[in-house]
Amino acid sequence: FLPMALDIFRQKGLPEELVFTAMIESGFDPVAVSHAGAKGLWQFMAPTARQYGLRVDRWLDERLDPEKATVAAANYLTDLYKTFGSWELVQAAYNAGETKLLRAIQGTGTRDFWSLADSRFLRDETKNFVPAIHAVTIIGQGPEQYGFSVRPDEPLSYEQITVPRGSSLKHVASLSGIPLEELIRLNSELRLKQTPPDSPYHLKV
Image 1 (cartoon, rainbow, N blue to C red):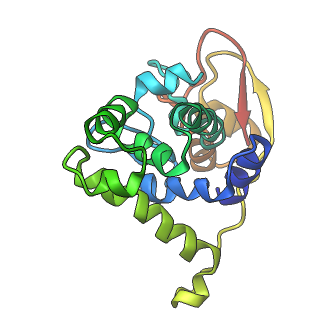
Image 2 (cartoon, rainbow, N blue to C red; image 1 turned 180 degrees about the vertical axis):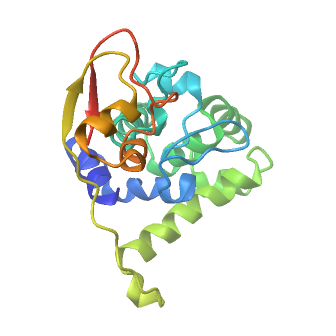
């Protein structure tokens, strides 16, 4: 998923290093679910996901669509930067939430993340989150230098076909000869393994 995420972040004018936020959030697992109910590569909670244009209902959970979720994350990070003006504060806000971070800034009188990390206003999880992203960014840009042997998977590639509303993946698989498991893997946002009943759907194949 890294090439896709880098491409989207470049288009949005975001620092490339920010894509490694997903490594700490989900380990780049597109179907990761946290104990709090955050989902996908970018670990969106449902209200934030909806705010950034992702559909989350009984039929679809677009937090599990890696590409759509990455576009939403890029837009969210852009908005956070407008509020906080520093990428370290953006990463802290991504983890803690904007309100908690603004309270911490008011409580300490500083907008320097490292000073905030020395205060009692942030949870340990947030204090560790930003350095963890820094670490995986450095390692991710030159893994061999740090003793990691990495053979990346092939970048995700697919085409989209339009299928009628309410199409079951099982039916599409039987008509197309595409293995059902592959359709489920590529379209993990379909909660009932069926396209929504309200309109035709762009299915990834």
